Image (tube, rainbow, N blue to C red; front, side):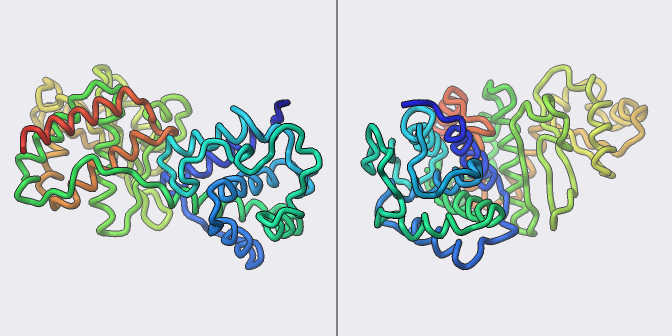
Length: 355
């Protein structure tokens, strides 16, 4: 099957937008009533392959302005098309397509599909005709709508069973968190555990927590921090989470991020702060930070998790562990099987201790 770069682009765009909604993006504009009805009709279809194909087609309509919304795009099948889309959704724990692996084959688009027409196919006719009538802006809105719906179907199996506060006590929560932050993970587990604790706690007050790939800030330097706290679209606070031994040499970079984002306070969460000669005592920390001329909070990661182990209920603590797992298993954030396995082993070890 010939490769079609527009097919590949449609797949990548769909995955990128689904990732965005998994990570907390919101829909700020809905499709027209006709567009939304057509999308909902496909989302509610009894065929898993039809649902997934419809996701693909609406994104393809945004990248190929010459497509007639009727013919089957060349190259739709294979490792760069239907199989890649299905496989990647499976890795993201998306369930709306029920883990099918190749919608093109399932729908009968084998070999030469030059004569196949969506508008003559009862499974796609209304959808395809509506899509053809939409202008480019409405097509984008429909694609965003479909991506958000697919993201909403994500089902992450909770690493912890629904234990009560007699099992997940403060002391035992500390024990679990200490084992997690000790995992060698290039900072992934540490950052995402902090983000998850903030995520669960700040939900009480309507704050949004955003976090990013552990190397995102280092590569692009466009984020205020590894974790950002948002209220009504405004950045309220940023956090840098680090287990690097050389982080003290980067405080000047953190100050630049703070100033760029217009923040009055910046928080650095690091390992072994309480055993650091420059930071362990308040007077020493004042001297260390004074040259930077900013309100920078440097917090030991153990102190941070201690506070949240005390503050959160057993149900909230469990949700934080699940959210950490969700971050780790999101390909755009981490998705590394070796780190996920270490995380699961640590949780299993903790469960063995308390059983």
